[in-house]
Image (cartoon, rainbow, N blue to C red; front, top):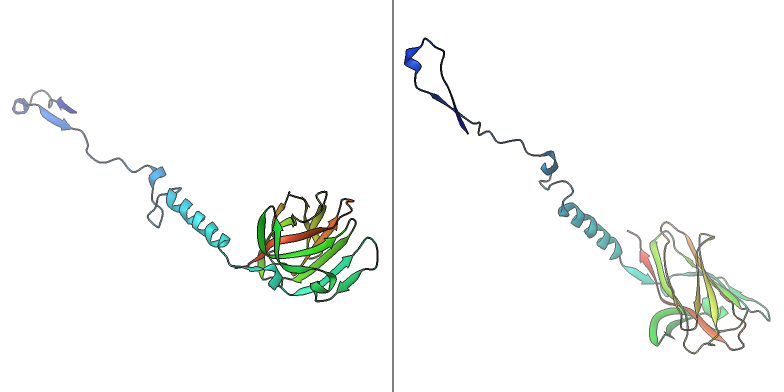
Length: 212
């Protein structure tokens, strides 16, 4: 906008009006849009993308199959009869590794206990050596199991119960827990129902993610 003013009276030479021009100096930038030291505005999508990339890197860490870890101890305690135990051989007490059929799917690299009767209990232990961060598997009953079958899976980390799930015929349970900075892993299974036929209970696609 342009305005006008006159010089004081008594100065005849200053009869012509003098224009006043509005200042063209730009306003300072808003603090909300101030750039960071890297040149990206604070709270923008750039920082969010960085966080997402870090999360993807963590989730993309390599994993090993649980069957590859060294067995520390294993035990099978039938409801009827004597217990069997081993210090370093899960196969000695009846655990097997390989493919288990559950829900019509073939789950490779599984650890399972066949011919599991009502009231039976068993466990298998592994050394972790603080090398792993996440344990993942599907707690399942094989499709050939008693349809009344129901088995509890308890995961103990360094002697403390970390998670317990129950799998039934046709109803698997997903397990994914932190085992970061841990030394010992035990997976204990107990048959809960009183069915008269055997079940095969197992940990399907069991993996341990390597720590970074």
